[in-house]
Structures are given as C-alpha cells and as structure tokens.
Length: 96
Image 1 (cartoon, rainbow, N blue to C red):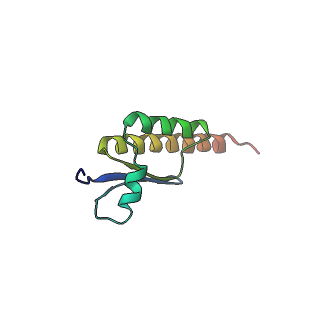
Image 2: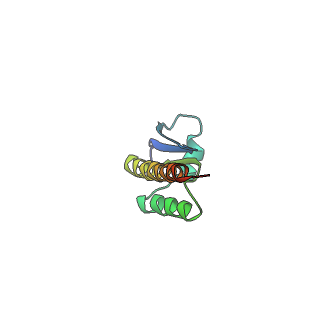
Image 3: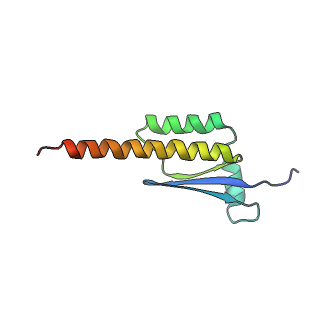
C-alpha cells in the first residue's frame, strides 16, 4: 500500500472560500481521500457544471495536488466576485 499523502481541502460556504491541508492522521482524512478530485481537468469540469446549474456550489472538496486545489478555489472566488458585482450593479441601477 502506498504511503498516505497530504490532501488539500477547499471549503465553500456562501461567499467564503477556505483552503487547508489535511494530514493523513487528521479526522475525516479517509472520507476526504475517497472523494478527492484527482485531476485539474476534473476540478474545472466540476466548477463549470456548477456554474451551468446557477452558481458556485457550497461544499467541501478535497484534492491530491495543492495546485489543483488552488485553481479550484480561485475559480470559485472569481465566480463569487462576479455574482457580487452583478448584484451591486442591479442595486445601483434600481430606480424604484
């Protein structure tokens, strides 16, 4: 059996995005490992599918590679930022 490796976990809740490392001896590691996204392409496809359904998907997402986790977190933040900008525009344009 291969040695366990650190996982990287992205948590999205509302307009908050958090990135943290999860060591093999941390609680929840086995569950996170089983659901971990292995390839950057899979992370991008998951993000794209969430956008097609109407926005960023709240949840906890785990990754084997730090760069993939960062890319997913940044894509999510950009989508949240765009949603906020759209809301600001709508409010500023409101005339009653």
